[in-house]
Length: 137
Image (tube, rainbow, N blue to C red; front, top):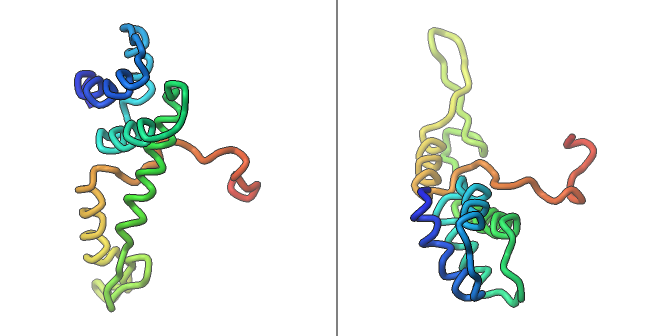
């Protein structure tokens, strides 16, 4: 996302909170949020505008809102496997007498559909530390 695109997305939030955002402030927010896809940043700004908070959201809060939107969009697009593959999109193929596992074409179609959403598979932030399990570390 370019800086002008970022400013266009965040400006309504700045206006709603009647903030005087200076160049260092814009720079700090841009650096903290430049990797967030525009669609998710727009959702985060909308959520912040509709919320009841009295203070301008910190970059981490906007990132959290964006991550929650990303998860909701991905959950709304569940993977539905075909008859020839497993529930996780793997299928067995025999090549030159050797059985191999490879991703089914239905899984690739699903990945393309997710890519078209523009939200990606990479989390925008780690979950809160209290939700970590020792086995996950």
